[in-house]
Structures are given as C-alpha cells and as structure tokens.
Picture 1 (tube, rainbow, N blue to C red):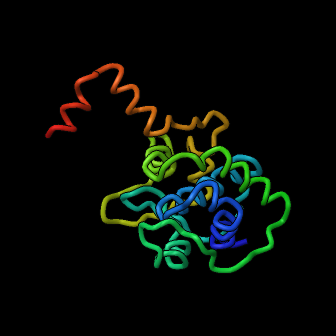
Picture 2: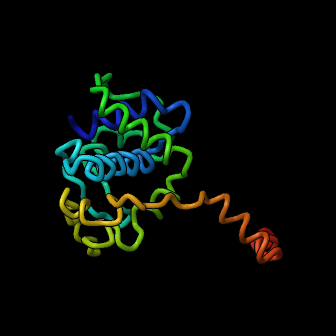
Length: 170
C-alpha cells in the first residue's frame, strides 16, 4: 500500500464528514502509519515521512494533493481498493482524529516524546523512520488526543473572561 492510497481512501470515505486540507490530510496519513506501527509493529506503507517545520509530512501526499493548497480536498486522485484490515485501521484513525482541526493535529504530532520532536532539525528535512515512530509517544497505547482548539478557547474565556474581548477590540 502507498501513502497516497491511504490519503485517497480518507478523502473518499471521510472527506464529506471531515473536510481535509493538505495539512490535515498529511497529519491523518501520518497518524494512520503511527497506529499501524503501534498495532502490528509494521508500517502500513513504505513511503518516506519527513520532519518538516510544520510537523511530519509525507512528500508523496504533498505531490499528489498539493494543487489543492489550503482549500478542502473534494476529489480523490484515484479510487483505491483497501484491504479490510487496513480499512478498519484507517477508519479508526479518522473517527479518532477527524474532528480535530489541522492546527490541533499539528499540536498532537509535534508534542514532546513524539517521533517528530525526536528527529526534527531546522532547515533539514530529516526522515522519520518506522523505528523512530515505534519508539515514540506517537505509537504508544496511551497517546492521548488533544482538546480541540474550541475547547482551549472555552477555557480561556472561563479563566480570563476579558482576554478574548481585548483581542476583539485590538
């Protein structure tokens, strides 16, 4: 299986529920790989994953879907048949992380202890290997999902009621 197959499946199966930009789609494909490694010890796809400033990136997905830019991806590159076990894994990741924004997903995949944090070096697109993912918090059973950005705003509004008002008037 290729990373682009995972991306096509996500767009085809989940695109209407959880619209994806290239940024969100890339993070979801990465999380599928991390979940596959956590579940089986083996990667689901062989494509390279690199540690870019914005987090883990699958260049093959960028090249395939890059023309969409920052808009929601509404069409897949090609229809793919996905084996049932792989489909269950991808669906599980989509259900777990699909409601999160691209911003939330970047926070998740750039967290301390994750593979990106262990290999990232500024201005150097280091490879994030399956071994690095397997040894990181990204593949641990206790990897937690961050609160959505909206929950963070709610907490700010509760704890600092005038903070958002100040931003509104500035």
